[in-house]
Length: 130
Image (cartoon, rainbow, N blue to C red):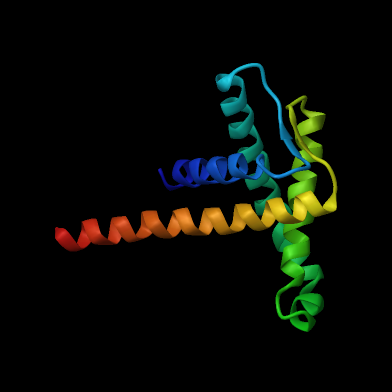
């Protein structure tokens, strides 16, 4: 259930990024767009699960020297890679360069964290009432 919830949160976050210039989500109708967002969210999750730990390990020194700001660059590159992989799979999702990927990844991180925090707080309040 937690994985499904995280997937929905990521879908909302990616959908919000499509309002940025340079990040395009095409589709004939709403259903096609939702399915594309679902697929892109799965791809983004898989990319993060597989490649982010490797990037953190290899770039450990850069993380330390930049006080973690290098993580923003890594997230942007992973978001850009997600766009490339989506294109290879024929999905109508495209990120048009590093800067749109940077801002998109930043928004995905902020929105995902905020939504996850809201849900976690609601669950804690529910548990407290019991």
